[in-house]
Image 1: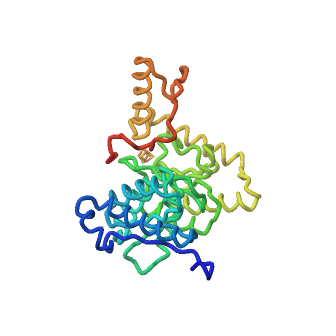
Image 2: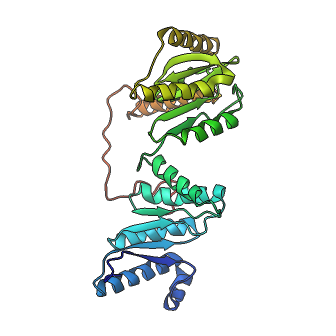
Image 3: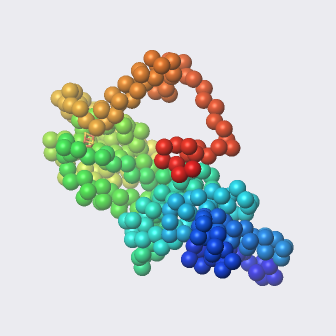
Length: 315
Ligand code: SF4
């Protein structure tokens, strides 16, 4: 590899550790994986070769997390992350998101690989991108926001979200698009979205950045949403607003909000809980970011893992 100028990936797999590490493996599979990786790294260094990255892979999410955390403390070479034979598209994506997401959030990992039981390798790439986008490590393509749904849902959320998600695949720009199942909260917590739709009483509103653009019959919501997105790009990334239509949409949202002012929606319950937590904290002499009082500065120790010692940490 050195003569050819070719980089290498050193792979250590829980299923194929060298024989002399089998006893250690019985005591601690994590330490055995890390010991194997360090031995290969030392061999490369003796050969004066440093154009490589190291990959420790296991089918176990906790072992992958623990071994990569330990390895990151021991060597200073790029790490390639993956969960071996993670499973089907559904379970494998979740396992990969939890395992790789935890490590990436710790700042560990330089390249990633998703292994799913599928012939459609492009699905693995999509999952990898979603993990990177969720952590805001990379921006690529639109981000879809969808409400959790509840009894107030005004349309078939599954069908609408699936259609919106599929049609958004044609766009490269990292715009945020929200789908809200009802207009009871107005545009609520998704008001920051670049574009969004919400519905009530067989009608719906397409909005942008918290402001209504158009009121349309509910069965045209998705079509009009994409019309507005296309107009935005045609105008050089400028929201094109028809004042009369925007006013009609805003009045409709206002009317729905007023009619449902007393409803306890998931969003309102969350807002009340946040307000209660803020009040409680103030009583205890603390100030939370959402409260209006003076904020208490919290100093983070950069050398500590942000998840160490937390309730769900394994450390
Ligand atoms: S109240 Fe909230 S969660 Fe329920 S459908 Fe409306 S937007 Fe979705």
